[in-house]
Length: 417
Image (tube, rainbow, N blue to C red; front, side, top):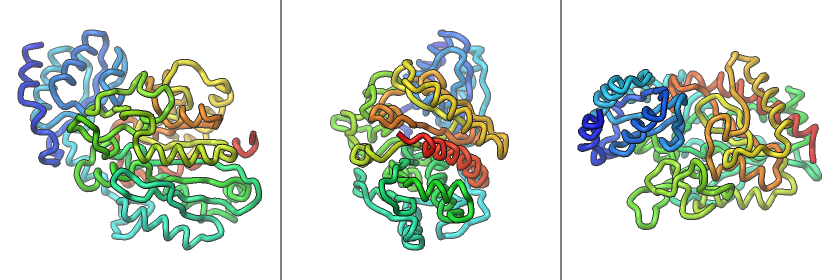
């Protein structure tokens, strides 16, 4: 078997990124049963390009853990042979990635303009932030909190009725470039707030008594790159000194157990922690804004995909947060709210034990800044489509997630500190 592995590795790395059709690429799901099978996956990753979807690095793979990964078309046959030979339990989640990619765009709303039921590119989202603020001046204002590595403005929407001494909730989307359902949710949330204000009692109360800061896309450069060059890109687009590899994982770049567990110090890794905490302009702008508003921000919500999880601190340590019981009960109730609409099942708990350890995440960082209600959502699905969730699922995904967000926001409002 090891001879087969060496053969697979021989012709590998050069083909990457020259031709970004994903034709024939496969996504496998495997369930390694023991350390030897974990070792086979580690070796596989060391000799060829393997894009780990879940967990996001081979270093996090443990026996009995479900692992989803993508391989190049010309390697998929060999990889499948290897999995068979090793006796590893596996299935092909996505047989042809290009077909799955094309199938994302199944929305009826094929308009050139902005739509809440399709994936919008960055230019469309940027124009939308200006429009929604212009159309709803009593509820929405737009500001710029910084700019990206490539010089794009980072737009932040502030929502709420103006009033004295208001506390706030901060929500961001689009940390990881390929998680397209995430920015779709931030847009949906803003739409629901402006459309249901004055009609829905919960939303009206929330906007009267709280402000919401919504950052529709954190990693804008990466998001643009997923539209123009590589749909599977995850990181930022900054250059790394002394390396040809581009980008940092912005959700490993915060000063929370930075670059310890579940983050890599290799610039070529998908979980690269960066050269220092907040080395990325995007994470620094986000952190600076929150630090500047710590007296008012009482909750932090960050939206990712996929896995259907509702996580809270900690991810960089197995230690539990001091208000663990409270956070766990909020997550439990919010997950129940979410499931009430389409019966979508979410798993909830502290990040490190619920999925895997990961240092440098924004939720842990916000919590350590004193924001005691800090949550990460991993939206649909559990891997059938992975990062390529079809547009026909945007509406149901956003509708159910909104129920959980409203529950958390209402809880925060009733427990201001």
